[in-house]
Length: 299
Image 1 (tube, helix red, strand yellow):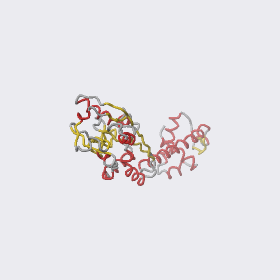
Image 2: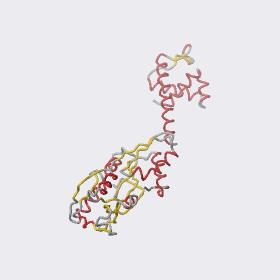
Image 3: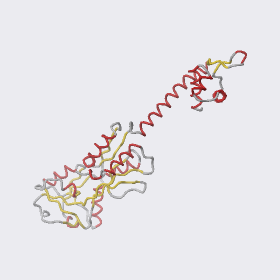
Image 4: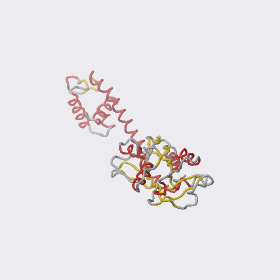
């Protein structure tokens, strides 16, 4: 069924005239008549009652024509609403943006999130707050639009780099690590580690690096809360490996941070998306804000 034919049909009924409908729609009378004839053939029913002796069509609906007219009104209204909704989405007057944020991600991006809301107040923001492993899976299965990832990307992902910070050993002040400026990972074989939940890519990175040089970290605690891990370090429960950019924010009278070397581990974050699917206008607008405001991404 041709939606344009339904528009012609509804216009004829509303105008109560084939001639007036043709004028309103900027169509010729023969074209109007042919459109209705084709519509009747498609529906296998007459829409209008025949005029006297069948010589002229009256603008009076048959019973079937009345039913079709009522449905046509609903269909055209829904089409109009659909087009209006699409227009609102394209012009960022409607829609949503789902961002995957690992721990500290919301803090890092809070200035950009506020800027996005300021520019596009009608876009609803939603957040998936899990580790980078969970975010990677969510980007892959298209349950989120964009997300912060750590390290290397999948082949069908694209990304904007946002942070590259060396990893540091965080220890309690006045520990034997306080006087050193660098520390090799192999020197930590006998230390008690405060690591992250298994769903965190950072946890995997540290464990794989230790395994590569021949030891398994002695883990005394795993947590997804960075603040909790830092508190446990303060209470001398063990050491932690954290990004330098984060360690610099801590109270230097309580903690010592030492750059980790051999291997050089980095907290390399990027704002990633799945390039195998169509990008929404809201996602494009968000990535534009990220790309043009990298200097605002900090603790």
